[in-house]
Amino acid sequence: MDHAPFVVDELAAGAAARLIAFLLDLLVVGFLFAPLLVLAIGGSFIRLWAIASLEFFGYLVYFSYLEGKRGATLGKELLGLRVLGERLTPPSYWQAFVRGLTRAADLALLGLPLILRADRRRLGDILSGTVVVAESKAALKIPTPGRYASLKRIGGRAWERDRAIVEGLILEVRERLGGGQAQLADEILHRVSEREGVGDGEVRERVTRLFGLDDSDWRVAVVTYGLMSGLVTFKRESLLRRSASILRRAAELASRLEDRMEFEAKARVLESLDEMRSKRRRPNVRSGIASALAAAPVEFRSSLPYFAVALLVLLLGVGMGVMVGSEFAQELSKIFGPPGDIRAERPALLAAAIAMNNVRVDLGVLLGAGPAVYPLILMLLTNGAVVGALAAHSMASASIMRFLALIAPHGVGELSLFLVAAAGGFKIAWKMMFPRGGREAALRSARRAIVLPVFAALLLPVYAIIEAFVTPKLANSPKAALLVGIASAAPVYMWLLLGRGSVGRDAGEDARSASGGETP
Image (cartoon, rainbow, N blue to C red; front, side, top):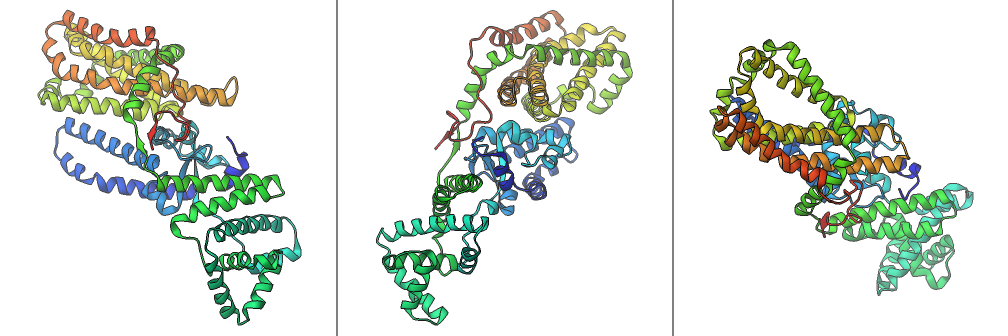
């Protein structure tokens, strides 16, 4: 990070303000998707499934798009909060996407990282390389003439800070007056004279003496005085840019290192706010998809130990399911209904519902809650237990071959992708908890692992289509079903194990350093 930690700590938004902003955003999202809840009333399980997934994607788009475009959701805007990259530059859409997903991990940990860390960064901020700052803490605070005069007599640290700011303001004013705005000084001089009940000459003498300027610089002194006393202000459209420029000048003039770093950091924040408000920034989805597909092979091969851990956890769940046996399978049947009820749905609706649900589990649990670890383990154990219980029930009823026929065509590839995604989740958690080899190197490794759940999310809809359209036709052909399952999963493994690919992108890259992330 370019700025010392204590500087970012000073600019960071408080936990209470962030919580209130999040609750406001939940109200907004809830209001937007309230009509979907009406559709869910009295609907089938598949409809409920689909609506729950739509709400998840709506939540994800809301946070990712607004934070990627403006650095703030509606709730953050109301509270004066702004999401920025670690370098205090505008965040990329990719960073907004990652921090939006990994909010699930922070909720799973009851928000403790946000509360306990001095810089108020939650797990999603650390993984995405973002910070949330309070705009009020970064605002330029120009001292009043009375305060400036008092501090000038006393001296000390406060005087050194204010002196640097005022001298930066004087340089900014001198530049503006040099651009043909000398008439402004005359207008301000008359207003100051009228307000204070003294002549123009006395005002000129007083302000030049206050700032230690020559008599020939009286116009600069008068305009500076007017800005400090609130008689005039910068235009709204140029306020952020002018404030940042003054802070940059103040940083060059400050005598203390801490002040220079603080002024530089605040200037960068204001420049980023100005950039986000004045420039159009759009997500480049096609580039992001291509990047995820290309980076997956290299990342998967470096994550094979984590893939093995995910497989072992899943198999443990299968063993648990076999132990509980038919009773658990019967309870599942009561909840989800007989398989025939689900198959009775239109294939297109079934494929869409399954695809959305699987992607939601992949992104929301395996990636989103992955850094908290235990939701990831519970998800694998639960899915394994379901498979094990259904297998045990099928063996007890001598229908194991039919069970294989109903699960193999789509299940081989689907479970494989869940394991790939889980490998990414485990790697992220491990690198964040045990940063061996240095914190920055471990964090870069964790950020690259995000590509595995994203890669899985891109391909899971394919297996949802197979489940809806192909699997029912192979219900009485176990051998054919198994061959279809192997054939559909083989290309995935071939690409992951043999594909050349490329090194994954760092999720901590902001909008200025990311390549292909945004279109200006």
